[in-house]
Length: 444
Image 1 (cartoon, rainbow, N blue to C red):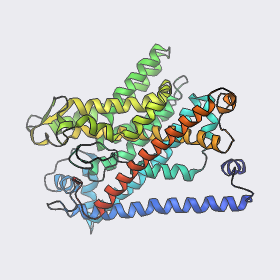
Image 2 (cartoon, one colour; image 1 turned 90 degrees about the horizontal axis):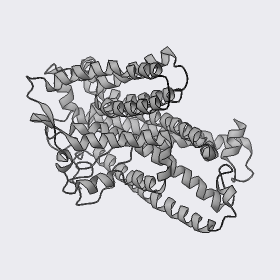
Image 3 (cartoon, one colour; image 1 turned 90 degrees about the vertical axis):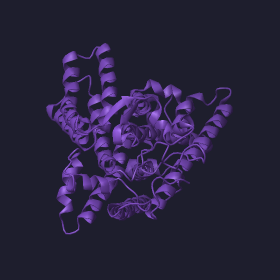
Image 4 (tube, rainbow, N blue to C red; image 1 turned 135 degrees about the vertical axis):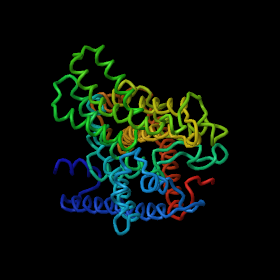
């Protein structure tokens, strides 16, 4: 612990260890209080949404989801059972709001763990850059990062979409209750999957496989959108590992973890698109993207402007498996959004977007870690104390053109920081307006 604190506090003068520890504790308290305040505000928002009966004020899908189970007896999602249990409490609307607020806070803490897992996975692959990540040891930074990642929204520019959310794509969503519940569960699935993926050359433990399979089925039972983007990526990685010589039997057992979820999704498909429903889906390239944007390509790019810039500056990082996983999830999600559309009454709902929305969380998380690596490198250059291993700046200190490289790095950090800041600004502004009762359509 002392080594951790010493590492964190380099360059901060001669403060003694006790003061440093106190400062870290204060920071931790402040971040946790911010997350609690976020949860309380979300509870208020969801409670007001449960009371929505029409119009634009506190508009949400939540009352529809509640009515589907209480009035219509329609059990498409596992959340329907939860709502039915909670609704018959003395104040069912408040109970449901508290439940969703708990899921919202759980997303922050789960994303915090995801940051650490991705960082560890990335650092293990990029051994020459291990020190860059090992310097980021304070839990407070991860907590703040987890909170920020649950607020990032598209870079809104007037004229390219119908609204700040409508016509664009985002991982931060507060109007769809099944997505809110799915989100933390899906993050846990990713964490469990990466843990198993890191052991692909070893023998899996049965309890790890069963835990992963059970969590995947639970997540699918809440909302199938995660499985539709995750399963294809998992299949790709299984095939790659097979080519690399990993025993077929081990990969087969690993792949069988998806089978319970496939059973769940078949049941859901029968409920959603059964012959008596009049609903269905079709291949209609670009149809969903064009519903609320006259410039769908620009709107899609603005939705992921920060990750696109980071990927442009760090395209060589795609050789790392964890980066491939995150961005492949994003590409599969976007392909589904682009290609498929529903028919019938749900044709305008854009429900093939939800898988892509979650994959954006992974894409932004990976981009944030890469951005932090560049920031640490720049800080090291500025203070004259480069960070990283022997293959890093220290080994290149006398290479001609180093100053040009430093200026390039500074330009990268400045540009990406401004864009990241605007993503966060748009998210905080959007959420603040939701709390004021503005519809999530939010035309301006």
